[in-house]
Image (cartoon, rainbow, N blue to C red):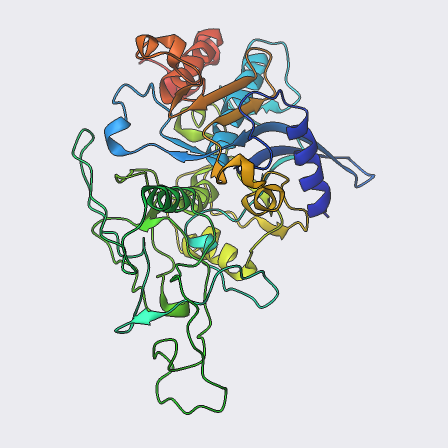
Length: 443
């Protein structure tokens, strides 16, 4: 049995051992953490050895116009995505050892050209927060801190700064979308930037108005449970996700309280001022539960897709029902999959330990002289590989790169599509032609 607190503690400790570069400034910046943990079970003792093989931090996602058709820009820098892409680097290294005859503690040979995990080996995904998107649409409980006033509504709809933003699909290079005015009045530039950042990061939050609504005593007899605040006691509420329903599909009803969001729909991560094409982390994790997290290229070498046997979430707002709905239930009907693929149902656990650099912990440590609390602009990737295990990026490129270097290999993240493809090609070249998988053989 996996102990969620032990997993969280292991990941937080490994993060503390990383170099300072790319980490948030204590008390002023916050970030999110995710990690892939290799589990090795003993033959008879029942013990489980846990090893962090990939780790990622990050909260950002670039917009459509910043994407590159060459695959040399890192589109999605949310922590879960960074950790998974770093794990692909680790898998490629292990396959290199396997195909070259040096051996691998991870893979053993199967049918011609194919490999499978060693007996007793599996993978766990840890994330310090509930994944953005469907999994983060969770009820607000009485026990959770409520630093903001209650939600109010206007003509049956909530008043919210970001809730009514329209999203439309655009081709890369298209113009930016404009923000709609705030309902409760004109905002300062700093307030608008902070709101955009909170939407982009997908912080579990509620859209609120600036003033505390008047709530009638419980004996009041209002006829409708959806009446605006001030006319009826506060309705049960849910945490918001910054991820927006995909353009062209059904949108959020944005009704008061628990009726604000639509569940079990695909969502895209919001960008700062323009739409993105990156699906929410909930959607990506649901996809990994069917197709595996190894990616299309490594599927050539693997007998079966690789799934996370367990998903552990750190301390904070959490709902077991929402996690199961987002990651398992909505894919349970998938059938007709090719050989090697199946719908997985990972064990879902939550730890009581909160990430030291979470948004809420950073606010508690914040000093007025530090300015406002903001998300860390950098994303860190660390994976257990021999060559260049650390990769720190910002805005889709290596951190600190100059404009002159853009478009060159010096600017590229080791996790971008182009670099991962080059790594895969080196694996193919290292494989004896007679040992290549059938799908990579030239006829």
